[in-house]
Image (cartoon, rainbow, N blue to C red; front, top):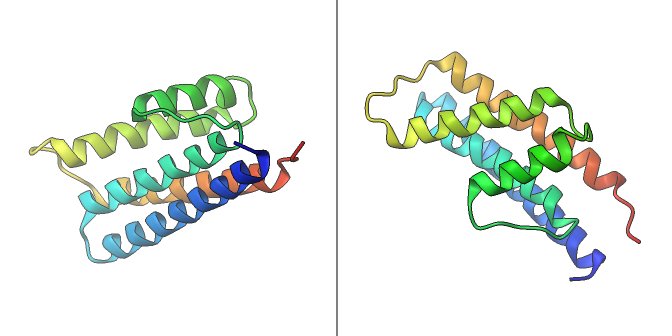
Length: 134
């Protein structure tokens, strides 16, 4: 895959992340917090996959995408350590929201998910815009 195609894919994935964020915010306004958590997580996930498209690198499993991002971008301090923790929290909350029948969602926790998605989009967009095609 050429670097030009990789950057185009990164931009496409970032647009998907923004769409997921908009859906999350709309669901939050409707007080559909579990669904909003799901869309906020996917916004974060697509933001990470946008970054990985620049390598190009991809994985079939979500946990592998997140582990690779943490190892190669967070631990190396390309992205702040705080975002690594927030991504891990988002993954756990999304799984609880989707699969745990007894999981109680608090609106403030969902808003934190949305804020993490916004932060991840901003960081990813900055990284992609500054990426130099060789």
